[in-house]
Length: 331
Image 1 (cartoon, rainbow, N blue to C red):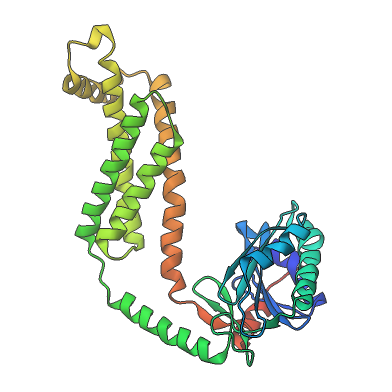
Image 2 (image 1 turned 180 degrees about the vertical axis):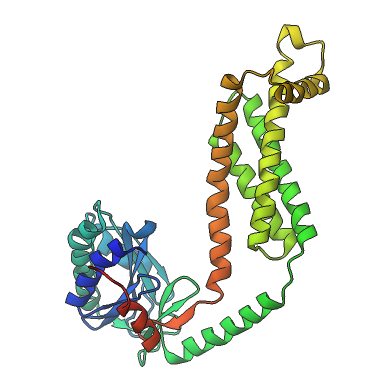
């Protein structure tokens, strides 16, 4: 999160007796007797407000929590339950500061009042234990857990890291997977074009299939895998575009007798000798590369974040986390 985000949320957090995690930007703490977390989503443009509650032995139901969103349609978009955890998505209001002041503050107050009126009690989101619940950051998500559940999460975290460190990257397998995935992407580009469309989805399919292919057969996704996959994508997008162009030329009377392979060679020769009309050739190719990037960028980001998350598990109110928050300059 950038400094503008922290400038908008830290005064609000301080006024409500809450804290801000300097690493993730998550707002957390005890609000009116409830341990809550507020997670920035959509790049900090809006938030997810989370409670961990129970009533007697009962977990919160989606139907009951949706009642709050129906009563406050201007503040909430939806409510989702998972065991003892309830997530409320907050409606955005333009800037981060506007969303905090006009949506988040009244939404937090309304949700806490609703929980209190319903007799809900704060607890661990995994087991329902009501004692010693703390705020943690686990695998790219905040969590309200008891000490026992956090200890279990730490043990699993250590096991996952060891397994990941021991897992070797099969570069050859990854290349084969990327090539197979790129063939599916190339097929999508050609088929969709033959149907008479130039669709963004064809480039997205190329990006996703190539990267997922490398990850599936490579066993591990690294920066090396990203580079290899991107090189394969660049080549395969060009080849698929050349194949599609050659097929299109077959329908032109003056080229119909040359045949597909002859036209494919002719296109490549024209590019080398400068005999091609770049004004009509390049725009569609550039657009296809842009759509491929549209599919590749979020896929790469997600895969690398997954690797990064294996190293992130900590208590947000620990001295280390507090020091991280204290280093933020919001001037």
